[in-house]
Image (cartoon, rainbow, N blue to C red; front, side, top):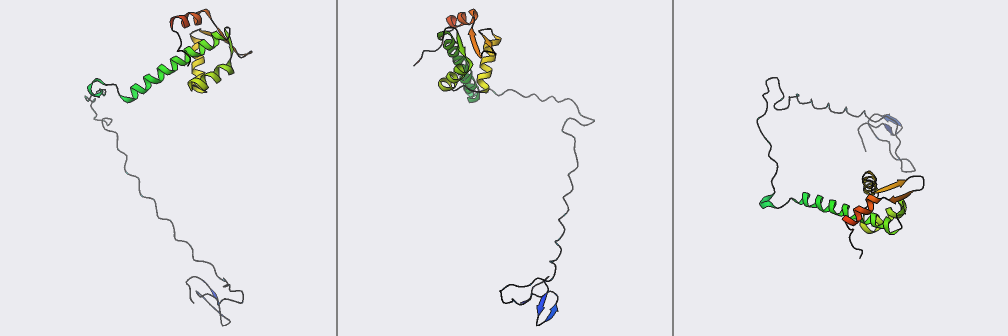
Length: 169
């Protein structure tokens, strides 16, 4: 058997580019180096850079106007409807969390409020932080970080009277 790139012993004489006969263990002896790998092909040249349309030295201001997409037959687009539904759900959750604080005697722990909004309303983590920040900014609750307690303010009680929370199931 002959193979390119290997050296071995045949009948006691070393012959280049030949394999040695297998010995008693069935192994072939390697006595030479493998050929060098071929070099990698050169990368293709980059295409020439062209200025974006309307930005060259002779560019005139564009007169093309982009019209906003109008929903077909006056129906809202699916993305708009989904965003509106999410906003309504978020508002219901805010009112429900305020009711929870009110029913707890005007004070509730942050963990209790978080668990309630996550279990019942599926608002957790980042959205819950947004919810709490909004309630504090509107001064509907006051939050004491040292105690981890939220206290319902008079403005929060008025808000609950004017915007009743959804009924519990």
